[in-house]
Amino acid sequence: MRAFARGPKIAATRRTIAAGNGWRVCEVVVEAGPKNVVLEERHEFMTIAAVLEGSFGYRSTQGAAVLTPGALLLGNGGDPFECSYEHTAGDRCISLYYTPEYLERVAQAVPAARTIQFHTHKLPPTPAITALAATMEAESVTGCVARLEEMALHVAGTVCTLLAGKEPSGRQPSRRDEKRVLETVRIIKERFRDRLSVAELASAANMSPYHFLRTFRDVVGVTPYRFVVQTRLRHAAVQIATTGNPISAIAFDTGFGDLSTFVTTFRRAFGLAPGDYRERRQHRYAEKEVSVVARPA
Image 1 (cartoon, rainbow, N blue to C red):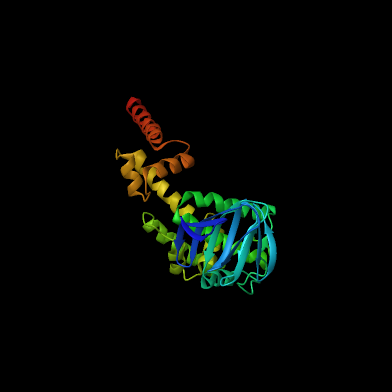
Image 2: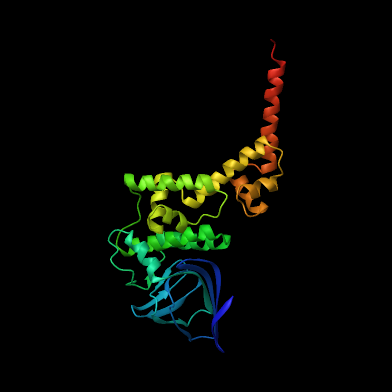
């Protein structure tokens, strides 16, 4: 947790959760009081922040707004700003920071998005924005870089789409894009044990990360991260059912970083813990063998 503002009446800290090339996910906590406290700062990067707790007044180049839980704060890189805490004792946000180059690549994949500069400081807590804020909060708890990278892309693309005046919607990918995505499917099948980032796969497909993420989901039906996890689970299930290898060895062999994550993920997908799954599958195999032996000639 790094302090970026501190004084007799205010303390603001920022904790980095995950980061990649051009993006960063942080938890920002501000403690203020007793009242009428103002925090003055400058945005280092393009910022999309989900307000989770507290409320505050915000003022920058595009005017003033009041931010409440469930809303998104939008800040332009380089802009000075101030947050005032007249009625609350602070706030907590999940903040996504982007370089202009990163956000520009995302915007290029969004129809009608003409600029990466935010023309408003606030997206109010409508059902769609509240759901987006909830996703940011839930994914931030995982600490998984791959999932957070996808979340950062998804949030950037959704915000750019909303600001362009169009709701996010599914589309029919071109044959060329389908071919590119299927090539990355092949890469995943060959390298599912490796840590494959969206940026790496998008580069292999010669597509921008956001355009790749959206197209992959349109073609495959799930995101690249989910496809990698399902591929790992499928290989693990075969090993569990057909070998006597320790569960922990299978987990690490199929690309899971730790046993606890593997067990939780496996149970969610198959409805059984890995050990129970093995016992049930091997019991079925034993029943089949007995049936074959008992069958009259």
